[in-house]
Amino acid sequence: MILNLVAQLLEQKKETLVTVESCTGGGIAAHCTSLSGSSVWFQGGWVTYSNEMKVNLGVPAQLIEQHGAVSSEVAAAMAEQGLFNSSADWAISVTGVAGPGGGSVEKPVGTVWFGLASKNKVYTFKRCFEGDREAVRAQTCRYALEQLTLYLR
Image 1 (cartoon, rainbow, N blue to C red):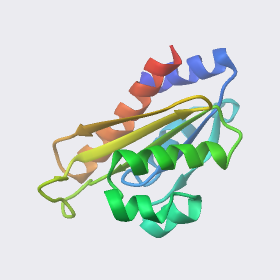
Image 2 (tube, rainbow, N blue to C red; image 1 turned 120 degrees about the vertical axis):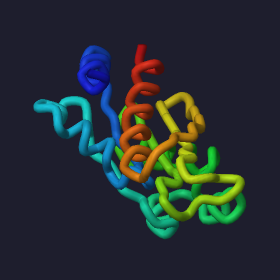
Image 3 (cartoon, one colour; image 1 turned 60 degrees about the vertical axis):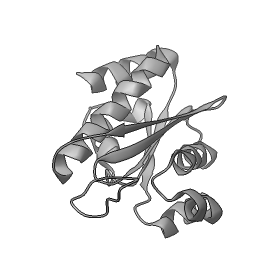
Image 4 (cartoon, one colour; image 1 turned 180 degrees about the horizontal axis):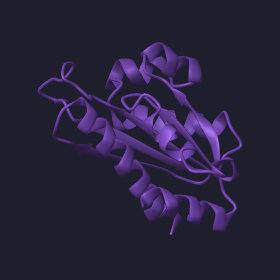
């Protein structure tokens, strides 16, 4: 199970994680806290579903206006603000269009931008998932945790 691997890698490194989530509504944090003992490596998270909440966390409003909430720039800023507002070693952010509405030609339903920040670097990556709202959200949570394991190794 991917979550067990995340826990094992973070514990081995004595590092911690926070999440900043939009389209998953806290799903990654819920996965993390489903493991007994996760308080050793999981600090908590933010659900920044609205643009206002993203700005309240510290994401510059200009980024959202220029690039849209579903963008590399906003995903990066969300992850950076997660680190800034915590003492964690890693932050995962997700912002996307889970559907069924809200999509556009440029950003169809299933488009998700991910941010992954450490103290030294911020990575962003995009995926387009298929399926209904629940499927997009579940795939987003899993993919975020899978990507984290790649960087932790």
